[in-house]
Length: 214
Image (cartoon, rainbow, N blue to C red):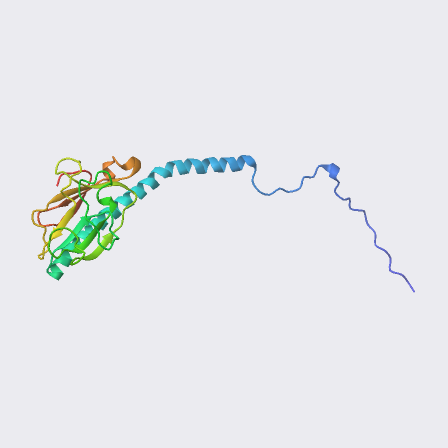
C-alpha cells in the first residue's frame, strides 16, 4: 500500500511590520475639511443678501396683496349686498366688536397692526356691535417696517386714511388716498422694496413700486 507523497514548495514569507507597510486610510484630512468649511462660508456670505432680499420682497408683497384683495372684496360685497361695507385699521381685528383705530398710527406701524372688513349698516365707518357684521379680519403683519396712510406728496403719516367706506354702488366717493409699505431692516429705505398704493376717487386701488405720487 503506497502513501500519497507530500507536495512541498518554497515557503511564502509573511509581511513583517518591520518592512514599513502602512494600512489603507479612509476619510478626509483636517486640511481638506477646513478648506470645505471655508468655501461654504464664502458661498453663504455671498448668498445671504440675496436671500434676505427675497424674504423682504415676499413680506412687502404679502402685505400689499392682502390690502388689495380686501379692498376689492369690500367693494364687491357692498355692491352684492346693496349696503355700505367698510375696511378700517384696527388693533383688535379678531375681537367680536373691533374698534377702528384713530390718529396717524405712526407709533404702531399704521395698517400693519391689522384691519377688519365689516358690513356697515349706517355707513358711519365705525363698527356697531348691534347692527354690523365682521366679514373679514387681517391680523397684525410681520416682516415689514410700516404700512402708513400718507400725504399726497410726502411720506408723513396722516390720520385721514384709517378707513375706506364703500357705498351700495361699490364706490368710495371723495375718499382718494395714498399708502406706503416699507420693508423691514436694511431694506426699509430701498425704493425697490417700497410699494405705493393709490386709491382714486371711486375707491379703486393700484400698486406702484417705490415712493411715488398718485
